[in-house]
Image (cartoon, rainbow, N blue to C red; front, side, top):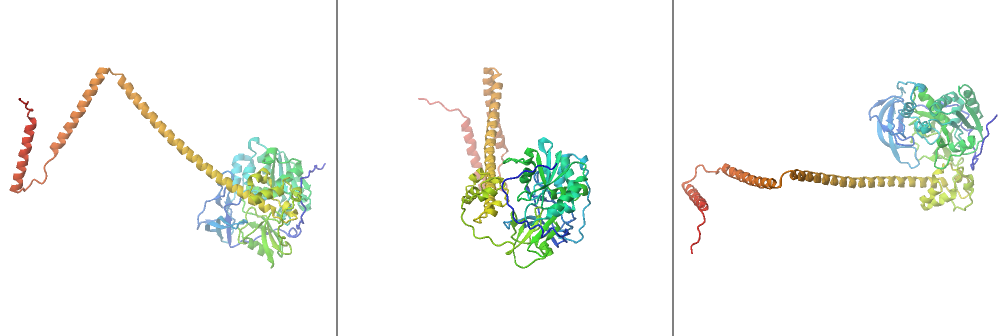
Length: 554
């Protein structure tokens, strides 16, 4: 009995353009002379470098350690010498540099020693940390650290595990070729995921325009010792999105602001499952992936590419042609234009789409919104794109959040159907980045205020503690004095004062007696005579001071 499938709202049917690149076998891209490996290839904190300039590294060696829970490591993609650590161009629409580690390869491609993991004998927490240190991250687009997604949390299990082989974006075929050629490895990775999540149901969703991949995955599923259901789903963009795949296969919707695990479901891309199997069964960290190079090239195809390989290197392998008008990393719906072809392949690079005027004619000039609501009809997240556009354009980001801006998956359906040719997704990305920037500033301001308030609290506390200590000391002194008789206490005070005065006078006299005249040697007769006269006057004064005063007689 076939599983009942459901439909998600909205979506579009753009031309697929899959046949251009899925007819050729996978080729391994040769080593470039230099690899530039960004430390930020995933959601969360960037990795911290653990090598120095001049170090010789081996293929698979850790060069950037994970920094925190939501982070993952990066590794050397080949053997060679570290020549630079610092800002370099990365594949981002801004064209801004980010911290990278540059390796000049030695051509030997020499591996580190690789040790498989016995995942069934390991504590789940230890296994997840090992996967984090092997750089495993989602290869379906979000690049979320897999160790975090493989933690079922307080529930200790996630009943349904979905493996996403949808690959709905036009032009991209890397997941299709991966499922055709490496289906056994994918399902080995699924077994590890199932072990960590405690899943009892495993569903593999593949769009029905990939019959070879569906057949290969079903053959591999039959070999497993647990049930795996491989399901062909209708090809409908963006059916390969995680939330859309969940709804199609189960009929459940992920609530706004919630995660799929909140409804007992976790979703992984087929590429992530394969990378997980290589890490556990072969001890290989994540240092490469399949990349589709297609569009305006002579030989569109899929390459196994080391991270850090420059885009122009792959375009040359696929056959560069004249008339190129730009390059996208990703597909035409969600891809990002690359400002420079020197930027490297990273974990998020699933496709390099070379554009031309024939394949991608320039869009007409954007016109004002006519409020036709076609964008709302096409939105798979059931949002109001025209309202989000209005708020983003006017800078009313608070209202944009009220209209669930962050539920937007940036699929591009709204822009695709817009008769005014408004680049709606660009406005949503701008609004999101502004909100993130303002929240970052607010967090910094809140932290500074909290530190200032704590400093004032600390100073007040220290002042109070000091006053309490002085008060306690005075109270103790008063209590000590109160234990002695009053008269005896008064006499004691008088005697103590007299003793102090007498001691001070004695010290002064002793100090005076110690003072000896200076420069008294070899005095002239006149000087000696003058001194004698002074001493005589001092003696007379002392004598007069000792005599009692005479009483007046009248």
